[in-house]
Every structure is written in C-alpha cells, then in structure tokens.
Image (cartoon, rainbow, N blue to C red):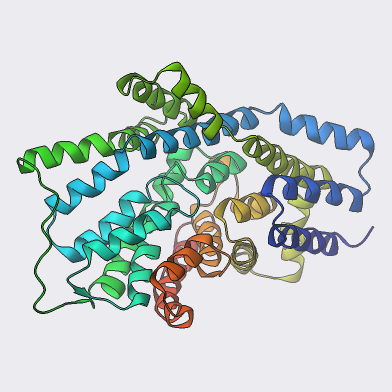
Length: 410
C-alpha cells in the first residue's frame, strides 16, 4: 500500500482520465471506489458493507427520485411550450434589448439541460439585433447568464448532490449560495451588458403580438409557474425537492391531459438508468472514503504540514472542476473528501462551502471541456481566445468574492 496521499492522488487522477475518455460519471466513480479499496487493501467483506451502505441509504432514495423527476419535468416543460411562452412574453413586456439578452438565456437556464446553450443562443441574436455585439460578446452573454442559477437553484444536480453529501438541507444551501447568483448577475451586467452600444439606424423589432400587457404577463406566469413553485416550496418551506417535483409533474400531467401513449413516451425519454448508476457510483465512492479513513486523514495531514485549509479546498475543487467540465463531477469527487474541512450538517462552515462550490464551478466555467462553452462559441463563430479574454475577469471576481466569504463567514 502506498502512502494515503499518493493513493488519493492516484484515484483523483483516475477519475479525471476516465471522464476525459468519455466514461460515464457513475461508472467512473464506482471504479474509483473499487481502486481506492484495493489500494487500501479493503477486505471482500469491507467492499460488500460499503456497497450496501451506499445502496440502502436514505440518500440513495432521495437522489434517485430527485434527479430522475427533474428529467421528467424538463421534458414536459420543453415539449409543452412552457419555455417558449417565457421567451415570447419577455420580448413583449421588456422592449429594452439589453435587458432581454440577459433575461432570455437566464430563464432558459432555470432548468438543467445538457448543451442547453443551443436553445438560448438564437434568442440572444434575435433580441440583440439592434445592439453592437461581436461574436465573442454574444457568446459571453449567452454563456454567462445561462449559468447564473447553477450557484443556487435546487434543480441543479450539483446543488442536490452537495446537499446530500454534506447532510445540509437543500434550502439552507440555496440560501447560503443565493448571493452568488445575484453577484453573477451584477458582475455580468456591469462587465458584459453595460459596455454594449446600440446600433444606429436600426428599426426596433416588433415583439410577438399580444392583445394587452396583461395577456403577456399571463403568458409569462403560465410558462414559469412550475419552476417557481418548486423553488418557493424547497427554499421557504423546506420541502423535499424530489417529492415537490413529483407533485408539480402530477399537476402538469393533469393540466396538459396526458394520455397513456404519451405517458409511455415520456417515461421512455425521461427515465435514465445512467442516473441510477451515477447515484450508486457516487455514494459508493463516498462510503469508500469513509471506510479507508481518508475523510479523517486529510484534515490531520494538512494540519501537520501547516497547509491552509482554504488553499486545499479551492485548489482541489478547481482542478477537478476544470478537468471534468461538469458540476456534479467535481462535487461528487471532492465534497466527500473535504467533509472534514467544510463540515457537515449543523457543523458545516458556510464560507468553506461557498469556496468549495465557487472554486469548482470556476473550473467548470473556464474549461474548454464544458459543452455549453463549446456549443456557444461554435454557434456564434467566435474566436475562443478573445472569448476567454472576456470571460477571465468576471469569473475571477466571482472567485475573489468566494475567498472573501471563506474568511469572513465561518
């Protein structure tokens, strides 16, 4: 057996390599857990106990329900035109092009959808037809504002996984992280939107026709109510996110009068066995970290060398986030390992939680492995180097704010 630190580096490296090779995250985390157990010479009985602890846990049931139901919800809202209602009504209610190019990708980003930037990119072009924007600026608008919710909205897998791993109510994590969604809007407005200038001699585009502003507001509410009900119930009433989503889906099925053939198609399109594998793999890896003692070993090891905890938190999460390109990837790989530093349950340190999440997400936003980044740059035919020049400052400011929070909010 190697030194525990070497074992840890080897396993984290394996996770990065497997994901870079296209192996699904669930299989990756499961294999990483097996290798970790082998490196620490865990017995066959130990492997079995670790696996059963993962599969029989309440966390497995809660994650399985929540993540699969969110896939169902996204499918219904997209196919039944709820998201298109939002965009049409916003173009009518808010004639200001600068505000619209912020709001359209933001509203479409309320639901996690892989590669969803492709849905909002054409709307940015349409809403900003009378604005002077380079391809790189259009890419920044679409990319930045689509991801403002990922810091805090309880529909995103990274937030849900973080809640379950750290044993912190998802409503509390949302409240802790909400300021960073707001901060990303403020930074995005002043650094991305405000410098944009209007084009001269361009006729304003007429918005989609409505009989009145009242009808446009009704259309907006009709489109957004399912998501807002979930957010309000989880945030203010501390309802379980999975059960809340199920209740909203039930209402949508009734309102839209789904028939049996449609329900069968919905199930086939929405249920993903890969999500179950993902949950098993993540929880198995987490339990193996406990079985091998790494969760308690790392904080003590760092203290013995005098390495600042904040430096470990920000560097580990950023490196893994940059390497894998998805939020649930760095949360699954690093949060179980960092529990000894971040804390869990009522003992969680809000500042360290913020630093861990924002650092990892900075890696996700900056990596060229991020699917939304690649699709956005490709859609607008932007120069990726000039795009990165615009992205670095706002993302760096978000990171600086996280460091400040880590020092001030213990």
